[in-house]
Length: 364
Image (cartoon, rainbow, N blue to C red; front, side, top):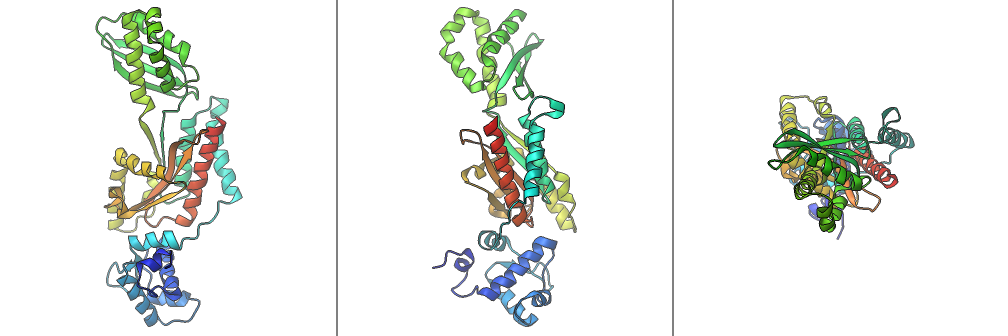
């Protein structure tokens, strides 16, 4: 039995070489123009002579298999989502990223990570640049998802705003700033804020919040001998607040949404894009979907209603994970856009960008 999904989807012998070529022409036409492809156009493109009537018979067979459909009464056909999935899995010829494109990706991402005007290295800037790069090579929006659990910090400060509230400020080793509001216990003296900041800064530099929390928990008795009880409570609550706000929350960066409007041709296209914008606003759902790419060794492709998020907008997403120096998955890069994304070009670009991000982390 053939392992080819096209063959498995059809009765034995129904998908022959001629049907494959016609199916490929329909999909290629759709990916290039978004327009239905008619039998006369296909007949002119085929290597072996075939009349438009014969082409229509094959198209009817493909339609019966659920691989193509007629969007209206014209003779043209478009691939269904099932057809696109089978095309991607069984017929897509993935190209390679050219040497020039590789150089461009590496130069842009590494230059951004090195910091502007010789400033401190910013991995967040590199993430944003990766998202912008991917949006630039597609008709879609570039996406990057990462967590800050492995981020290393160099300074922390508690800034009193009023008697009941303080601002917790963290400075990353890459020069980035994070801040979060946190409540203060009643009657906390101003000196406790400075004392807690000094205590933590003596142990923070070059470490993650998780590492710092582990040390503080192990040295709780020692800490209680060095600071008073109310300062110790502030230290523990401040670390808990920092971990909740900075260490566990995933960060989603989206760039190039305007690209999605460039190819709008009809009212239904505009409606679809509006729905996709609404999907992107629901960051939790996008994060949940991107997280599914963590299960993949390489690139994953999500097409249309295969996932709940895109059931209305009929969009596709191409995503790949990247890893840190310990080979732990720490983020995902991808592209989201219409189902007629240029899969052959975008898949290797997403894959290579993920590899560049991983190498950047390994060196960091």
